[in-house]
Length: 179
Image (cartoon, rainbow, N blue to C red):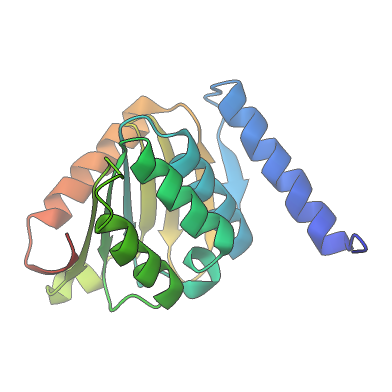
């Protein structure tokens, strides 16, 4: 298969992200494409030791329905990582949802996946998307429409603030989609 300019750029970005995690770097790096979001969240799932939390609009299929994402989810759950996701709307990623339900029913996977959809109108108005791994790595997208975000492999202060936000959001009314 010939290497296209787009695939070369994606591979370069993926290498960059992996290096930031290998170094446990506190540097902040940008990500401005849905492929970048997928690469970062896959890394979170593959490297997590304890937990991954995700707050997003609707589990965008372009990000979550990728084969690397579902494989990374299985790896996380196999490694005992708990994954908790809150969406503002009905999840769009049907492949991810099917895999998540299957994995959650597998007794050989020691991690737990919980997926909630908010029922609160005010929660739907939140503009941000974010994800946190092990209370130290994060991805923060200030405007869910623009798909421009920042991330870091090692910024516990920011990550813990995002966890507090996540816990506040979880305190509102929601539908449990997978538990």
